[in-house]
Image (cartoon, rainbow, N blue to C red; front, side, top):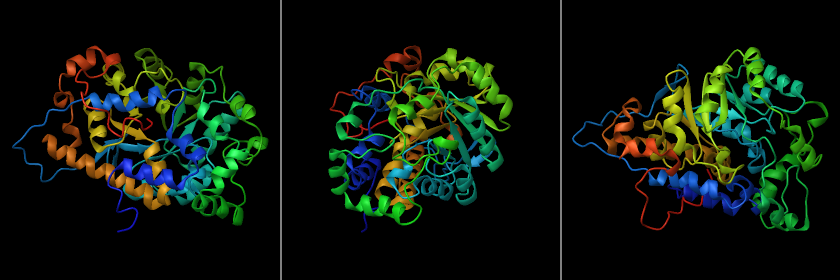
Length: 413
């Protein structure tokens, strides 16, 4: 039995990735910000939610397939944008995109990827979305929009929930930063993880050279050791307004999604400025540590805009049953980022595909156990005491567990 076969769930894959990756890189993809309260709450919201199965139902022909923006996908899941994929594995974005294409779900390429928009479009296959940060120099962001449009990406995901640089103290303790600057602590970390050193960084140095931020314009298209952290943080606009979204709507011909929505007011504003859908997200708990969990506010956002736009959820997905819970509360699909990175950190494309296969198998099992053989049959009637959850979203579901938290409780959103 190989290493992949010994991974039976996402927690197993995470542990395997933790062993292979330097601590600085692993904690960068795994943790949130400050005290990791938001990442824990993202998981706790799912763990508090209880389901009501029906019995004596024929589930022999169950299917996880569904439609998203008019096109069939293998399950209601898309790969969230993750800017560190190229550090986790050699050409990580391309490997992750290919795994998504293998399974039949969308892949979202991050602005700060180390693989270019054009290479992903040419080599990955499958359904492709592009995530955009709005930079202070707006023309740089608009250039990326044009590149993604020319390359045939079908959706633009505009991320609005990182107006300032988050407070990630653990990076400082680990001697880790982006751009990558080697400290004595960081050097020891790297040298004690030779599989990553030779399998990832060694391959870059032997082939293409140090990876670069391929989707940044001009002088900003520097390699991962170039520039400085303050300069990188300063690129992102802290003066973004809804007028920027309205302008992107005029420029972008495809599906426009706004990511980082946690209130009905912002969901309404996104629609008013041209969005086709919203992604209910707290950035995986990586920005505001006191943030509400996306699942907690999903029902009220669906109630406000769900009949006029597509509502997606991002944050905390670790089981196939989590996907079912989000769909039952009104999400058309979910996004997840860290599970794919765990798979990549363990074994590249095969590891990422293993993660997606696990989630799809678990989702199929959940459908069978619930007596709901199709995704379209998941609705609020399967949620225990749904009226309490919808009436008090900030408190989450009322059935809090009395046992100790599971090992998933400490995982990031």
